[in-house]
Image (tube, rainbow, N blue to C red; front, side, top):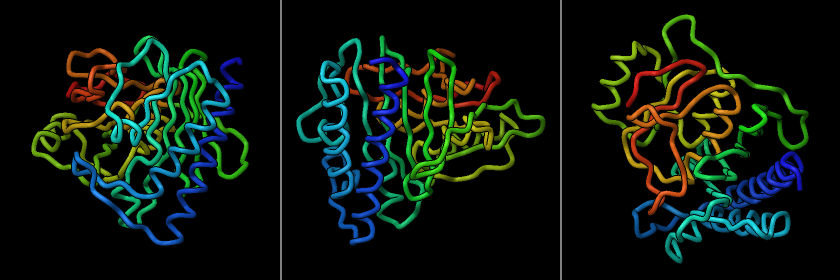
Amino acid sequence: MDRDALLLRMDAAAVAAGTEILRVRDGGISARTKSDLSPVTEADEAAERIILAALAAAAPSIPVIAEEQCAARGIPEAPERFFLVDPLDGTREFVDGRDHHTVNIALVEAGRATLAIVSAPALGRLWGGDVVAGDAWTRDLPGGPRRPVRARVPDASPVGLASRSVDSAETRDWFARAGVTQIDRIGSSLKLCLIAEGAADLYPRHGPTSEWDIAAGQAVLEAAGGRVLTASGAPLRYGKRGCANPPFVAAGAFDPPLP
């Protein structure tokens, strides 16, 4: 299967998962707390089942590392090539009745997220990216056409994005040093997609994240000409033992201050 055909199958899986997420939301949300103290709902688990079945049918030879599966069974050692899935990023947003939650499917090859879909079902938007082809796009759900997106170089003070649920003096100080005066607080990987389409410029993250939170958004952003860098200035990589990310900054098409 070629890359665009695989991306189409990933797109269809994310749309189906998003439809199920909205069905659960409309029926009433009941959340439980996982061992890491993060919330999980029926929607997380149902969306993951849909995605796992779709990926097994589309690319049975490619292993999958998925958030809820890892919560139940432990995190496996990552192979050279694998899918990385967060079926519902921004579960707190979802439980609180906000729309900034996403479905994330990424293909990781040799430590790099290279192919991805990020869907925001409650917003009726979906983004895709192929880093190898340098092609990033968005479309409206359910069946809108693709529109290309590109990250920007800000011509004035950059627009910053921050997590709604995580705040720190370190991040506030970083924004001040970067000259950021407008800071919008948004949950989930949606932040990386907004930078990819030129609606914002910087997203620093000093607090903890897991690989499945960021991989798909990073691939969309890099395909659009942006970047996600660690404190050393290197791109954020995947397949790390334990799946924990170091601090990073996501940026548009320019060199950002490092975290």
